[in-house]
Length: 113
Length: 114
Image (cartoon, chains in turn brown, red):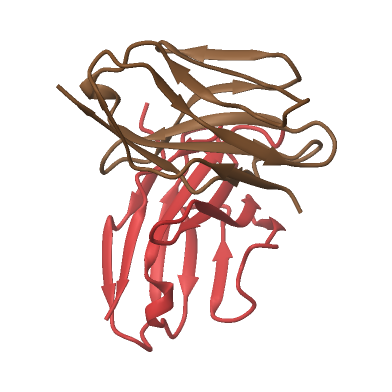
């Protein structure tokens, strides 16, 4: 079945460091791909999305490119801030489906001043 | 412009009791999804409901779990005869349409079973 695999955390970085969180997926057809972020004590918020191959999603300095050839959707940010500390979830929505998302296990990011 | 409201935020139950988790979707949203997050794991889909209808319950355990979304009032996730393995964070999400790609999540209910 469809699945999402993320790099394990926690990831600890210093402020202004470069961030990469790897995400790969297994799916049939043409899924949509998402990154959600969960701040402490809050629900998940959509960070960015891409709906077809080679699309780049971007928001708040974060970027991810839908790579069908490598079945990947890695999250990147050029310079992280302390306020980026959160749990990041990669997810896919199978093609032809509704809001039934398949999530990765989440990666905790800790940014130190 | 209230977001998705879930209550209670924290719920403690003893084994064998019933747990009722409530979710009020965003205004204008008629599609509700329930997800469960076990410790150290990602969110797992449980059930998808529209007003008065269960559309997809493929992620619901076969026993003890039920969900409803009545014409009036919040969506309810009900767990009967809770066991320790039910301890988890339960998240509700809503969307205005079935094909809407963006889900709006509530802050979750943390269920602890003693």
